[in-house]
Image 1: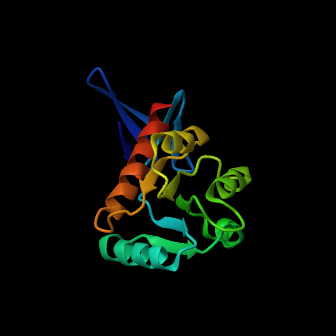
Image 2: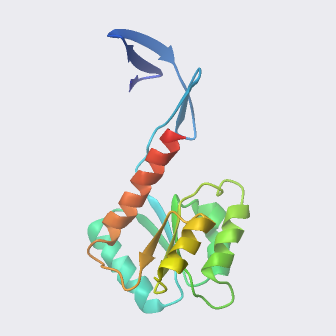
Length: 170
C-alpha cells in the first residue's frame, strides 16, 4: 500500500486498486482498513524539577535533534501549557515536589486528546519492580538516570517509532 494525492493504492494479487481516503489525525480510513500514518516527532515536553537535568537534556537534544522542546519545572507548569503546546511525546520526572510524576501522568491522561500520548518516565528508581510499575501504569518507556546525553534523542525516537508501530498493529 502506498499513498498518492487523496488516494491509497493497494496491491492485491498483483492488481492495483485506487481508493479515496479520509485522513483524520494522521489515520487513513479506507473501508475496513485503518492505517496510522507516522509523523515525525516534533513537539516534546520535559517535566523535570532539577535545573541541571533540564540543562543537560536541552543541550543534548539541541545537538542531536530538531525537536521543539518545552521544559517545565513542575506539574502545574506542565498542565498550564499542555493544551496550547500539544506535545506529541512527554517525559516526566518521577520524583518532583508538590505533584509527583505519577500524579501528573494521571492528570494528563484525564485531558481530552492526551489519553494516547506516549509518556516516558525519567527516574533513578530503576529496580525491576519500579520499572514494571511504570509500565503497568501505561508508560511508553522508562529513561534511567543518569542517562547518556549522546543517546537520549535516539532513545526518544525509538519510543516514538514503537508507538507508531503499536498503533498500526491494533
